[in-house]
Image (cartoon, rainbow, N blue to C red; front, top):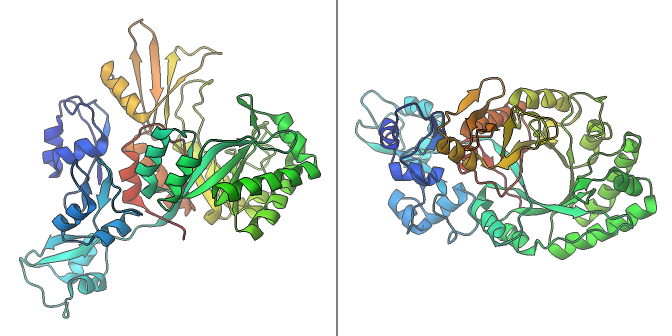
Length: 471
């Protein structure tokens, strides 16, 4: 897969010819609603012929395997497909191996070096006994290059049929699916969530469902509610018993605790609560994780940050999700949602106190549309990356790309004369984030939140990583 940024005057058929790719494959993988309308600055992904295939109407995994001379099981295993009968139009498949025609002067060694694989891999795949004996014009098979393996979490708040279908469609990309949210109550009980169909969709596709517990009440994170729980050990024991009952009843694999805006004086109380949770959940076979604010130093001021003890969380729980997004928040000035320079500042601190194999870097699947000039007290509208490109096309805006933030944006004027500024994510900005995950050697990435169409993200993810699926 390659990323192409649309230039002025380009048409999709020209782009397809440029890369030697099939135009229908490009349309499907990018979910282009009108292939004749491209936006200058738009990032589109280009599947690589012979190495990747985008499922078209009428395809089955069996027919694709036949076409490419691979087995159905090989194709399913390479792409983390739990049920070979469940594939979707627009889904990109990576081939386990692809053909190469030997050119004059080439050797097994030079071919292996070109594709980043070993000589032995090529010899074994092609049953070649003598590496010195290959012929010009001979077709040999090249195994797909190995990729780093990470874990991927996705939060979801969509529990209707549309949400269930989204999980089915994207399950190959997830290690975990986090069900947001179960809220704590002052009496130690928890709120209910009608999430069973979505959880079953995850479980059927080898995705571990996670129960998310928050101090979210009345449409806000409640500091007093958190304090009530964190300052009362007997309430905590009752709460944990209720959590265990829910975990077992619905088949969750673990618990993610996302307590936000906790009073600074409850910092040690929060740490003690986490230890109590872990001591009771681990023996029952459940893992425990936390979601923490994006801090750049231990003593960072602010209600969002002070009670989140990075070092303690890193020691106590199985992994942490750092919420490295929301710099461009709905009530603030226009800005990139997750500017990569700011994300890296957080990680620079985090890796000094949390083991890297416990860090999941947060990544947004959404953008925002602000009215400009921005005024205090106004709120931006949340948009999906797909909707952002659609808006740019509608208003004739060219998409820019900020070199420091590694994020796309554009401005437009609506029908009423109101100015707007939109920041969102695209294939380039996600590639920058995945490069960061690799550079820092992190456990993986955690998405907030499903329900925002972003078709380009998934092939970019596939190109960069193998996704760990737990037994």
